[in-house]
Image (cartoon, rainbow, N blue to C red; front, side, top):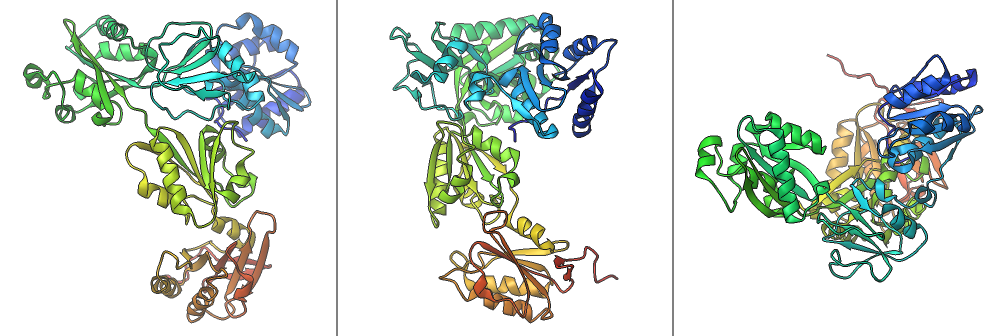
Length: 580
């Protein structure tokens, strides 16, 4: 199970019938992968190298090395290469490692072909994130600092502010205070997270967070060179690195200005545009009535820089006020980092029912918060250095508050729950506390109801209702009204939290309400520990179900008047009974 999607264009190269069969298997699973042919296999490999983002070669490793060696240029731009042997026993990540995606691709190819992935990249081999895989530009002594991290040597993490980085191993420790200007005369290694220009040295790697927004104003027909030269001069004079540019921002009416567009393309950042009304509402230090008369707002560059990508000027600091040439104006703002809260549904319990996106979020997080028994299910997925905050049953609100507090402090957080986090789980309490300082990501999961339904047959083939019988947070009279409504509406009814030692009568009462509206032979299914050790499936009817066999690890599924037992399976037909 891997953390990312396959590359957009994959070239498949094969020389033998067996290799072509393996290539066909990959092509059938991935429509964006295609067999590349040539007069010789070497020609095919060279063509795939030139045209594709990644190459899967069903050839001998030595042959691939000899063919591609003269083509090597830069690991940041060369295609990833995975080599699969004749018997499809191994998928070898040959080139492109973690940065180029070859490691993930090798794992995905191995999954398709029932092979074993072979990964030799040092950081991936020991399950550490590579500095060039964090999604931000990285500069300086990347190899030296990466080696120090791998070797367990002390590395100081120095950041201007907290950014939502993934977990880093224990030997990477946050330094006290701001040491971005300090040297490494003590012989130690540093990992800086800053948008400021810092002197290079042989023991410092610099991560460039996307903190800067350049606001740009321009006269019609401004030359691209004028915009670019002004922007780079402003950044240099302020001691800011262009690698930290998040975007360029301007007014809507400048969206098609060729000089601005060319600058954006050259920098490889997006262009964000704002209507004049939004720009005019931003308080700026240097408003201009001349600009207001021309474009409907007293500021373009400063206001756009402060609005950035998310329209929150209160989260930004104007570092450089508007600076103009004959036809262009530039201002630069620094935007505060936003914490990241991923609310992750783990599914019903089995590892193979956990989604790849859930795994990716768990591996991206620096802090994971959850119920102790759910955390035990995923500890093997977490990266070294992940901080784990666990608690027991009944502490849902405390877990939600803890997760939000960690994210509000600028960290990357995963809050986990079983099934789907939005169904009787942690999403609701967490989002009650999360404010606009936090980016929230929801990761859906396979619910207990879906897992139980699959084990019972097809009881959810038509309209159904989910109800919790726990009256800890909902008064029983409200629950009773909802059960009655489900009974009167003839919904297939699923009971979560059906019965506990302290709540032993509610399930019998609910079944009695349903029994008043359904035949006594209406099927009822009870699934305990769906997809987990101790899984048990029990079939009964409304008249015969013994509530004492049900507990909090169970889901109870009561059929509608249409639900039938077919070969021992609950089935609710898709067709409508009532037709006009």
